[in-house]
Image (tube, rainbow, N blue to C red; front, side, top):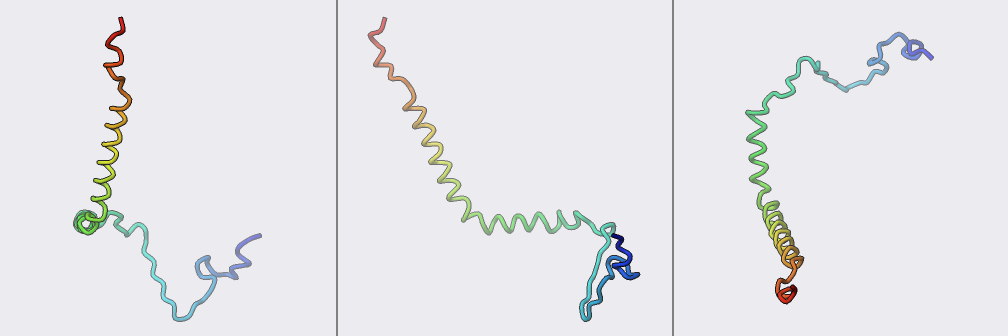
Length: 89
């Protein structure tokens, strides 16, 4: 099935008419994909980090301390007791 009879002579993007609707299109060749990354992006990241640091840091620090304690305790409990082997020859 061809698209030309369906389009009734219109281009693909002009198949229907809408009243009171305005659309804008920008050419992808005219956009700056990294425009404002350094001037606006980095300060925005710093602002967002400062706003969330007290929600993220305490649980992360507590989790790390629990993990470190558990690893040290596991290593301590996994060691053999040297006093059990003093009389072996």
